[in-house]
Length: 383
Image (tube, rainbow, N blue to C red; front, side, top):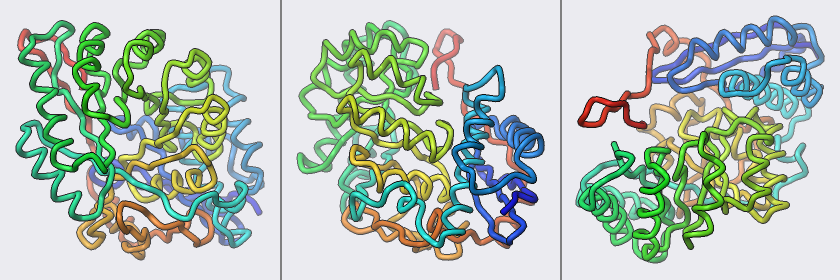
């Protein structure tokens, strides 16, 4: 079965979908995207598919991954690995459909029947955060994550630190002690301020603090980890198992959050999870994207013992209103109940794309870029 053609669809507000076709009529879908660099990733996907994949055996998934990765002298990084990720997802989708079985069966079979998912909580005012969290808790969510703080200077005031703590206190108070609460510093905090914030947040029993530092300062994670009882996490800006290696060897994190759309796809996410398992490190895959990426991430999660929870941004509790789930023929496919998603049982990724709707949405202009924040002195702040 040979790869014969491909198409790319840019979908508002910031997604890129890949359709791979074969000479036997079997089609696979992937989601190759770096948010804010859509056109760059589109070019990388086209270069990889046209330069190598067309005409090749669609079922040699691992070989294609190695060749697309290793044949380039310059390899890795967000653009190439995200392009490879979408291709890999589509190839696995084709393979699962060819054998008429879910991808997780091909990866060894499921180790759980349902997957806990967490809900992202927005807002910057404690009362609004609490209100939003109470609503989502009532909808059935049992795990939550808050991006906090916003603009944060390398050296901050006591009042700025207090505002961060107040937001977390409001979230914890709204959902109670029987819910999971995580915080994502989003790389916005300097090392000395990260130490202070971690000290102040220890009493709130957080499941993790994610990205307490930017990836450029990964060598400092071990120091932070030794000074706090809060589990530390990172990984959405790591792009292969090799990027995670030193963090695991140095015992610098308790949780990693690789993204199936940035870390090289299903093939590499599975290897990253297995690598983390040898160090007793939990995996909570990052995935604030569309249903193709979510489905791909779930396939790995259901076959990996140490994947304990899954991010989602799909409005799973109300699929009829979800802009993202509208890309599926059946928006209610992901069965959400009491904070969990049931195991998908369809072939391949387990989803069916509404291709007519995708083509309609792809007529729109897609030019999303992440915000650029500034401190009050005019200097660039981390987003």
